[in-house]
Image 1 (tube, rainbow, N blue to C red):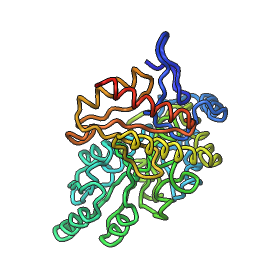
Image 2 (cartoon, rainbow, N blue to C red):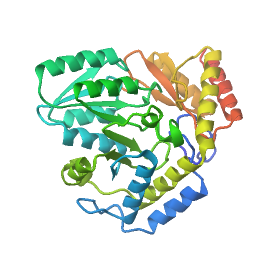
Image 3 (cartoon, one colour):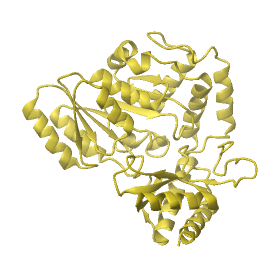
Image 4 (cartoon, rainbow, N blue to C red):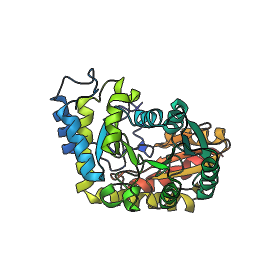
Length: 367
């Protein structure tokens, strides 16, 4: 059990190995930054806290300050902070999609998008992962058979494979067929685009709706939605996952606010993430592992295939001092088990070299 997680080598329990974290999502590594600690403290000073919900009112001053700071960073008309990123996607799909509407989801989309589609009253169609041709075929069928609206929802960087969506082509299809576009920037924020503003900014795309989470690069808890003010005003009175839950913990809001400012102002963190990911990806391939993930992505999956072999290697890595995430079906497709590694800005070249050595040793220990 980990007692703390404030860097690439967290505290372990008494008598335990201090594992090198290769499965943490905090990307730009704001944990331990004095400004983030100050943000925690500032948030606590704004109690009373999470027992209150935010119906029509603005909530704490910290809520609006965070929303305005996100708009300054990412652009857009209006912003709404949710208690979790998961709740954002549940809320968007269940609130916006009516009985005559169509949802198009990538087959590898995050579970929150798939679950939101189940809650929605419209029809859902999945297209092959990152296949513009597959999406086009489904959109043509929809347009021939329906006069309702459509929403296309994609991750900009996919959480298991670490690959990017073909965002420009998808946005062009949405324009051609009159569909709305929702992008989930959870795994791109802080790492891709100017000032870490995500893949939408990198590709100069302006989606109808942009969501993100505070639990990855920003190392906090919560989520947000950016979109037209008229839409978000409707969410403030009609979105059940927003209305019927407590608002975010003030300390988490303060920490997220500080982390956004760190992401914007400290470019070296983004550059370090990309450099260490490239080092890890190349090193794993040199060792004969099937390592994936697109250039620039902080996620480096190691494809194993068999569930048991993946679990055994995961355990061997942990025993030798490296913690990664083990992804088995149904989190991934059958016979596509993988170990998901992630890098942080606070990983050094030596940390990555040590991790690569342990990958080699752990594999050898299994015979």
